[in-house]
Image (cartoon, rainbow, N blue to C red; front, side):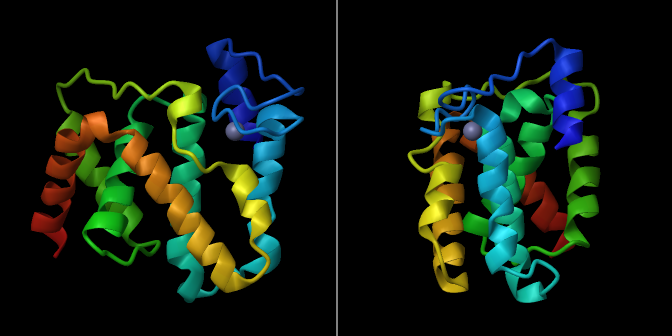
Length: 176
Ligand SMILES: [Zn+2]
């Protein structure tokens, strides 16, 4: 979370600690800070060191990052969206070894490009938010809720579908 604070400070973004989240519009009372607390509650139910929960971990990281995308660099949207495309649409089971491979694909893609994927407005980044994670109390419920959350966020960025599909194809052509 410290990275996010540092990024916000450098980018001149004031993080609001009262009311709804300024990024994902979640109806929390302590803004993005509460969103991060909600996300961390997953670790109380799921052991993310267990490979059977890797996919859920990556889905949650991507959903969280994209709903709060002002807090990361412009090319991170490409990475998170392409990873969601590969997991949700191409049925790739993600693990830690695949992320550097995807980063390489993005690095090749972005060479000589100036492109940024504009996010939807804060209230339009998916109907589910970090608050919905609180409804899950078992591992199975967490898995289902995170998948629904990630899908909602992914489809809210549908304007960029063709770019993301093409990067996902680059990944699959090289690594499948
Ligand atoms: Zn939020």
